[in-house]
Image (cartoon, rainbow, N blue to C red; front, side):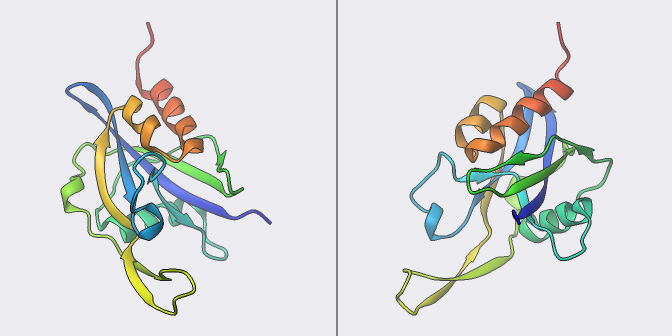
Length: 156
């Protein structure tokens, strides 16, 4: 059965237009990468947990920042490893990426060494324009940028 994650994609209208609140993943696997090392803040659902509740829980755990307001469901995506991501958009213009305080996880590093280290799940966060977001995001998540751009950007 494929794994399922839920996450939140905050957005705002900045001086230059639409901006998206994204996070750079922490830990040794991502240490030497920038492109493909960014993501919406998300995590796997606990047994019996509703996707919206999981998305909000994960955002709080991985950023330490509060969210309030209506969530708008985006189309589900499937990442390269097969994980399905259920994402929700929220307008949250006041989020401060410099205030992010992430929880941590433990991993054996280097693999097979017998040494375990703790790393933050989110190394840092930033408000990014759609073009920059597409360049830095995990590839499959670019579809979320496309969708939110269509939802919040007025047409001609």
